[in-house]
Length: 482
Image (cartoon, rainbow, N blue to C red; front, side, top):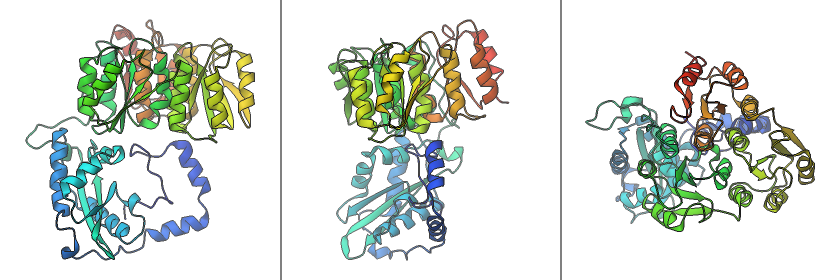
């Protein structure tokens, strides 16, 4: 059996590994008895397969595979039939039909009736963002399905699908020349194109969600530090009154399960919100009365009470909150905003609800005063503390050093403006890489030291040569691992 049950492992929300902190906690919490049970489970023989005559006559695995190929072809993806995926999917269906948990054996699972056609089953699965993600996965192009009768319920069937990595050639559309594993980024002619290019380079079609923020001001967009956590989806930019063509093109490619607008109608108009329904079946909005309330609303939409830690950054500038985004994504940590000299009421209310053990202020006293750090201590069950350095470049480098290891990718953005760093933060959350900042005149010493430590496997520069000039790009290239 290729995948182990939920008690023995945890699949990350985006199909990759679990966050590093969660993985460590899970390993520590696993008792000897549980470990023994998990080991035994991998040795159990699969339930006997259903006879061919018992399978839903309206939807056989072969038909599901054929339809999957057609759906993926529309997204520009090739598909091959995979024996290992078929075996895994059938075992999952057999387990689910027998009343056991086969969900974690397979990428997608469902229950259907004898009247359901394959078309109806796949349409239902494509309406679920996690299932859509796997069906349209850009690198797992070997497909297999399994169907099993539920004993005692002759009109109901368990359906499971699985997707394997069968090599890059499997993902090439039929009759097309070889494609790169990722599409080339859209040229970074402006902030909208930069965000679209980073999305294209980091997210496959079928993303669970796409986040939309105004490209004309960073206030509400800082909520993206919470919303685009854990690599669920990219952050794309619009104007208040329209959807730029590059953003529309990227939304068509992504086919997200849903779209979330960050900020109120003053930042992204209701007309734009309605227009976004062309690209997803569901569009919602996360907004508050101001940037602090919007960030609190984004936190409330994603986190429950009793979190281990909360990051608090200034809402009066952008670098600290955005640099903290990829770190928070790896540790599943909310980010809230504060004014330099006062704690906004919306932030205080959200901290009261979250009941965090630790509150960590990101940035130095110039960004968040000592008075506010002291006030934050009332909302932590253990302690409040500060994590900041002399400037935005050093703070971003120090945050990177907390969690990222040598070989991880590094996302580079200018420290002089916010849009590129905003889009880079979402990409970094998806690909487990930090956002590091550079100046137009060169690579700051703190950034250079962190790049030398990381020896990144890939350096991704957000923005065009107008914001990160060729000489800075040449200097950055020296730090990429060969």
